[in-house]
Length: 230
Image 1 (cartoon, rainbow, N blue to C red):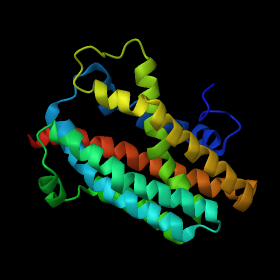
Image 2 (image 1 turned 30 degrees about the vertical axis):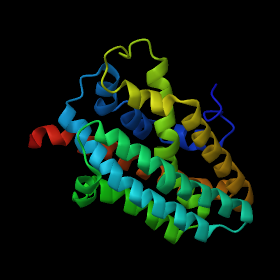
Image 3 (image 1 turned 90 degrees about the horizontal axis):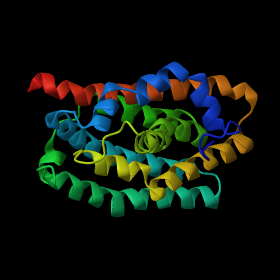
């Protein structure tokens, strides 16, 4: 059993409670087409543009996490996440997108898709209305979900690696570096649950996790819809 998937973690309990939503997200047609290399390029480019816009709001979520933090350690974690996005991950994403013919100024000027707005604003709303645990649970389908997807695709012998234009995307989220990011998020959720939570709070966290997971699946839907628009 993987570190992030340990049955003892809050994350695993939330994922298991939202099994149908989780399957629809992690086994989405967009993901399966990444795995076999058949995803239309227009869909992937649209996804990359929206992911750029998503990262901007993701950075805002880490700023909110710092504000919602009650300990210096939590503030440091939030500040580290914010710095990682704005100082490292965004540059990597822009460089990766350039290989797909996407310039940063064009991505910055692109309109946000409704699915992008829906998930990013949902995350921020949960953080504003709740506490740091609510925010981290809302972020988990993205942070930990991408790690599970990358690891699953990389470990599946049916995944096409040779000649697959999306192989580097798979490798990025299957990498040890990204797996460690996801593991740290799972650990922090457990720490926050011990400090701020109780079993009586679990139902509300399950609802947040399930809704966030559904919004992630709709983000994949948004990517596929680009083919219909030509």
